Length: 294
Image 1 (cartoon, helix red, strand yellow):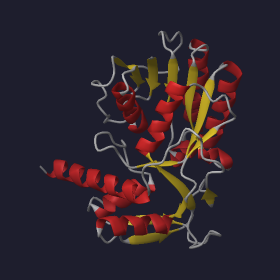
Image 2 (cartoon, one colour):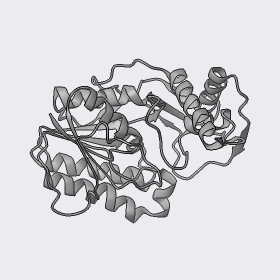
Image 3 (spheres, one colour):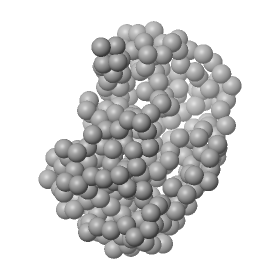
Image 4 (cartoon, helix red, strand yellow):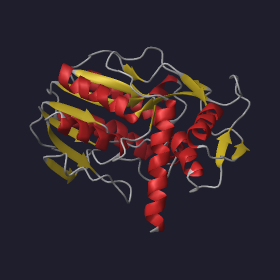
């Protein structure tokens, strides 16, 4: 099939492009390359270009749209909510207007919608409503915390996700890790989250491409296993054998106590666990550190 992937050179987009190409689909990649770095997806895309999804009159002949482009850093969404609403809501609305009749409009939403405690989550929920209004065939995936790597593609920009930050401390890139809040009503006082390996998540997206639209309210891409912040750090220590110094800090605005799967999507077939996420991320961060030192 002919697949459009927005946000193609990003962390998840690059993994998706690779898997779609390996499954013999024709992939068109769009991205604005927001960061100063990007994943090179040219080998997996029949066509790739820098394209802002908020521009009018987007054109192309596609069977499926995999819409991954958007702003996604919670603390930044408090600083520039207008930009988050413009990209995540209006950009999505523009795509649905330009490609309303595709076999499946697949959307990267977020589990943060459960609390709606920040502009990022609000923008994603609004985008879900836009898709349901405008697209007859759609699959709305609410991503939980996506981590790890396939060893080729990687997260870009400043590290903000827990596993990546912990891996950088273990690799000696950072001196310590900040833990925000120890007084939550959880088993060890730190926040609980569900984590899914990026290749398990992107496998689910590829299944949706090939098997058709869910047309459900939403689909959860997670594992149904929650880990606290301290448990994730302990997993990184176990996998790497490295000490990870911790600095305990006050709570951050927008952080929820727990964000766990209510029902894992049938598109998910789990092959990896928290240890795999920690190991693959640590190996990559160690390699990147070595590259910078050469």
